[in-house]
Image (cartoon, rainbow, N blue to C red):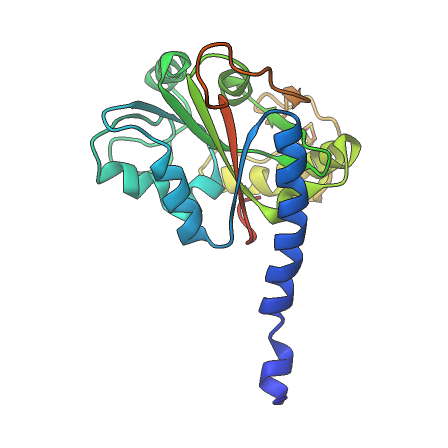
Length: 235
Ligand code: SF4
């Protein structure tokens, strides 16, 4: 094998992520969550869009993963009523103000809610932490269908590891991301580690651990659906 080929470990990494994602998919199904595996971002986008009925009211939760696979642009190109509290009229990121909060409230009645997850465990549990609580509340109850886009880099062994991932990996990077949005610094965005701060703009205030989903009483499809992607996505 050529030296240049030896340096590229993309096939091995893809294989590793596929193994992890498929174990996770089986565990999620045992807990009654809808679970799909998409090897690539493009296949993940196709899977997500196939699950959204035309003319649906679609709510968006803050998620780098959703942005990365191209859902926002795809929704713009279709017949949907999109509620995105994280987009200002000029297209920039926007996460404060009365209209944004009002939209988060409307999303409780959406047909579909699309967001990411901070971690998913190998025993099929979903772990999320929010600042506002809009994302965790809409995942738990409200919108008729929930679609979570999750890169295989967010798969953890168990809930303890998921909680550690949120405070030591996702939150510090998210804090720096929000600094770029002009929202000021948080301690973890400076030190790279959680100090259980009391900052006014603390981004981890409400944590939701979903262990299991009840089987639907009327609809045949599960309410919460996870699209596991065989690539690194999000924070
Ligand atoms: S509690 Fe504060 S320091 Fe810790 S992860 Fe959350 S925002 Fe960062």
